[in-house]
Length: 295
Length: 286
Image (cartoon, rainbow over all chains, first blue to last red; front, side, top):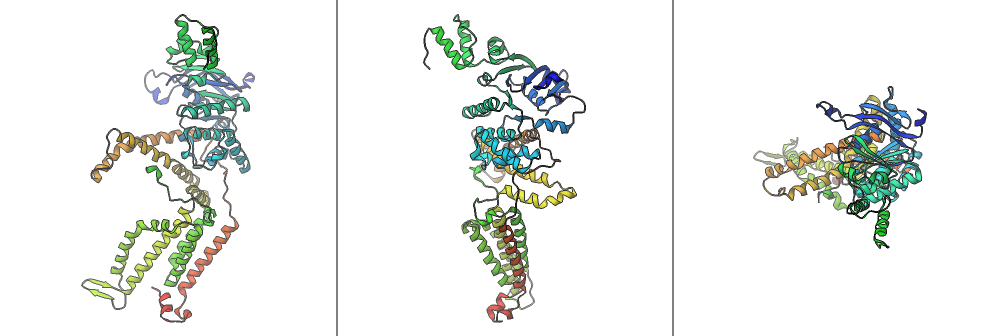
């Protein structure tokens, strides 16, 4: 148990079968025999095509679903242990926040600041503390001036920032983003991703970001690729994205620059190293062309 | 655009009526309604009328808005007035006695009083509650006033949470209806022509996707709420606390005095006003 102290999430042979699917013969488990752990302060992206089990994994980590088999430790406490009560679940949930896909379906109140206050109110905190947290959380996502607005009048990106503020107000140590950028326009996506990065970098919040977007995943410190309920890859973005062929077989693509260089290499124009970011890819191209490239 | 509809016709503002605690407005609203029903003489109705005009002036809501609020009930008022006039049997000689129609003075008086009561009721309650109180603070006020009921097992908080969520999702669902309508219009659906039956039938394919999505939203929202540690049975705290101010106390006093005044005025004998024709008219009781 001791070595799990600085692990915020730790899964051992985790399996989950959806109940309505369990009636069917040979229903494949949504998550099957998955073992991984997340250290405090990590920034993890989970990739996978639809139905790969990545959202189920997030719901297991947030204790919305209870594992069918295997052991799961959240912040060093075994969730799957006997005697882990509902009360304990709620205690842990304050520590492990979750931001969902559809910003509309997670806002409760008709006024922005009251929505942000919803979590702390549920925790039964004193009024002054709630006020402090609401102001702090709204400032952290840059939405102070919208405190008295109605959520339905905000843009998708703004709503998602309010949803993040609502989670931040509970002062979690981990935030799970379950495809939180997938319904946003490019501007809203960029805002939300930059907030995620800042929360991870400046406040030391562990971020687990489930996404479809490779360029978002490339910015994480670690990438986990799910396929058919199992972990297909687990490593730094650089390690994962160089496997362009295998990723394609899983229905995924590497970021555009990596794809381009991969195709060039296949056509007989190899490059050095494992470029990942846009700038690295540009530099690699420049080197191949033997000069500077202006973008 | 159907998304332009405003719920409950709340007009944001900073007047004294807007600033009052919602609980004050609920209670004084009840006092006002009681006063309306205790008013028995034209003089009392005159007092009610002046008081209502004063409230309108304080709220800074335009008279045209108030008149628009009365418009929907005009036909009902006309209809019930006619019934009152025709059906009331008085003790004196009928004013009109023609064929089967008998009109007594009591009937006319009753119709006039009834009309005034309904109009004052609508104007007074919408001024105090809907026009100057946001739906959310009204919900808060109701929850706070009804909270003693939770001691005898009535889930007051659950109802107020349901109200809040309903208010939160009305605009979202209206927007969605708009979207589905446009999607169906673009594929040739016709919502605007044909008989009423035809138009009603055209709405069915609209309602099905709307309901499906509403249920999906409800489920997602429930999960999101649970993730934010929401539990029905646990004691919650509140960010905004309703507090009574001096102005609330003052309004209670004004309304209570007004109610007492109406009761007194309704019992005032005409002789106190000199006993002349106008005095007898003002103090006429039915």
